[in-house]
Amino acid sequence: MRNCFTLSLDVLARRTIRFRNLAVAVAILGLAAPIAAIAAGTWLVLLALLALLPLCAASFARDAALVARWRRAILDEWTTGNFDLDSFAAMFAAIPVLPARTLAAMLDPLPTRRRLGEEHRPPIHIRAAISDAVRAVDWCQIWRARFEVARSAGIAVGIAAAVLAESVWPLAVIPILWVIKQGIVRLFERRVREWSAPNCGEPWTPEEVAHCRALIARLDGRGGSLSRSR
Image (cartoon, rainbow, N blue to C red; front, side, top):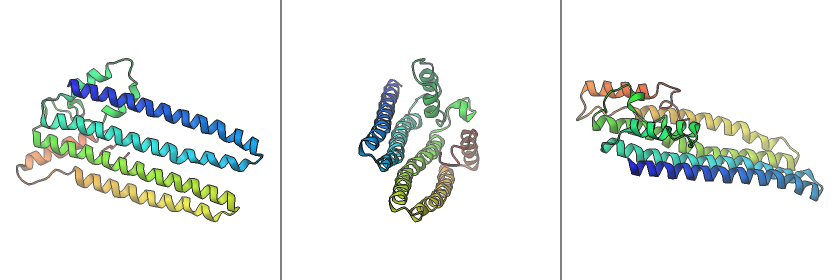
């Protein structure tokens, strides 16, 4: 548990640094663009502020990948060893100096006994299936975040092109990207449902399959985190 605790503190520190760097970058660009526009005598310089869209999206995508790697390491310990997720989560959440909301977002998808409604840990093959379901959500979130980077860049370029060309046609990229986003979200929802279904072959029994599906449903009970990528 000590290794997991150290890893978690490291991830929190890295997230804090990255968010701080993002805030600094946003502040610098937010101040520099108006000053440069005044100095240049043209408001077109303010179009540089559109770079904030892909910049923030890229930062969030990196953060999603970092949290997913952390969660995968925690789930590996839980699946194959004697790692107690409930004790870990309780100990971690009890540290007053750590950001409560950030911790809650990191810990909430983990299959603790409290979330699963179980007094004891499930067998190893059921734990593996539950871990796969959580990993499936994380995988979808990572790719959804990466698409958001491309979508944000496309929107920024479309708006800039529309302003510079004095035409509304470049803005057509915005509804097109929205339609593509809806299709990707639905694809990810379908993939998560497929990956969350446990393998019904050996060594599974029908009772174990039903039990595993019930546990995944309980884990998905608040907000549908395993039925849609967030």
